[in-house]
Length: 345
Image (cartoon, rainbow, N blue to C red; front, side, top):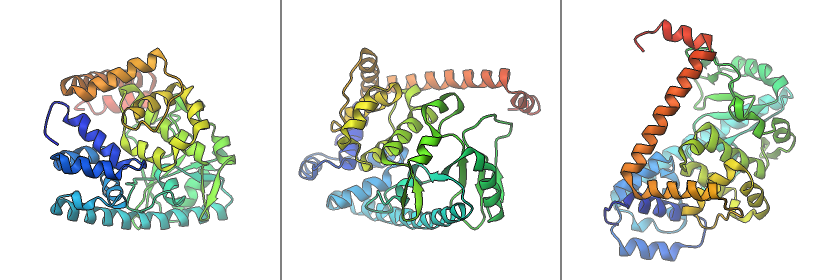
């Protein structure tokens, strides 16, 4: 795969084809044989999207590992083994916390990667890179759950340098003896978007897999998309992150036609689906408005032109940073005090 002005877009498409669950093994093998692949760029871009171990596992499942350079194959195998062992440890910690919360009748569900891991959605435990253990807890049980985890070794709390009101989760709880830090959520989304997810509905429609409570498939997909679009600013930057995309693929979004139709009618979800369709045509969107066409065109332009991609991201980043800090200065007394006492910042 020769280097060109469009190499970024080409490599993203290659990674998409590797992650896809469509029967494309023959086409992929022919493509990789016929072109010179820049595996260094594949590693860089896949790492940025937190799907490097996913790429390795999917190539293995598609029986295409022989196409990797030997040194890269060895490296990715070792990296995936480390991630697999870490995830197995995390899974044990998830089960311990689950038993603890259930024993005290605390209504909860595990979220994000932890939910997918506990729900046996991955063919290989090394596929997904997982950070914190995210748990949605019924509001009335939140303080009890926090104190309970503190008593069971999660004694260190990581907080902001200033008071943050109505944040979606409590301070991160860390145990010296555990791999995963725990975040207890009262909301799934930031405060101004929290109305888009109904906590009570997510909790009442939960399913139990391996004695662990997780959201229903539809709710998992909805949460995944909104977490990317709003919490991680995917909608603001008009970008796509393959970690979230792969979660949707694992949850078999492309076959869920009824849900796809509903998501196509929702502002943030339709944006996500429209961009996802660029590299994953199996993800169909039933509504294609002028707004979506414009956003999709700008997305493709950024893929094709590096300077435009970098410039637009920097412009958006600066705008968001300034507006966010101004808002904090105006409305958050604790933040003002923090800034005034740390003038060197």
